Length: 235
Image (cartoon, rainbow, N blue to C red; front, top):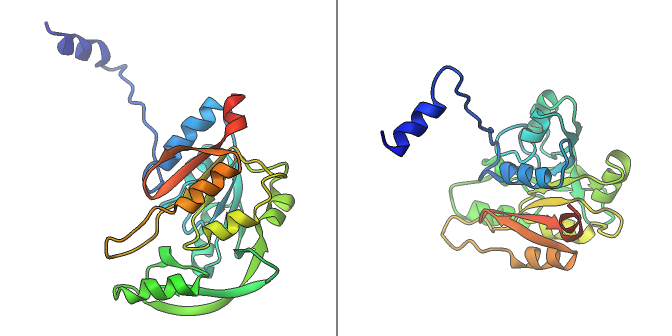
């Protein structure tokens, strides 16, 4: 009997157990992040999902919610927000955008492909220019400061921040108080969206996060996963 046959006999039968985890993220980011928190010895985490979009589809936080973690879901689109609030009943769900200055409201561009919704007029018009998407409506929506959201709901700090806001990611990061709040992990969309094969890695985000004391633990091309250097060193 060969090695493979002996292994099959050893691990098959009525007591065989199948071990797997269900990923909800676009490219398995939640599985990588779960491994990181395992290394950091954190079973339950707190999170803020900025640009939540959907309670489970393409979600970087659904896996953690399903396994008992809780946090804040931020989604400006009123239609998408209702679905999130209906499903993620134990999360704090905020129907607003994250602002980067003193403005309390801004124009929000709702596209025919809602994963591309954005507060950036430039990006919305660029998406529409490809011809396969269109701007369906523009609505005024409230803005909240990310540091104020954390102070109100997630002290001393969230363990994990998922950030996907179509063109506004860098501006939000620049408004973040890294001296006051030190999430162990960030997952940030770091690839421009195009439909003509000209997408580019947003190296400015990677450089900025490294300047704040984070390193790239993993990169799925679309998203980059950053870990706080000191937290990793102290694991």
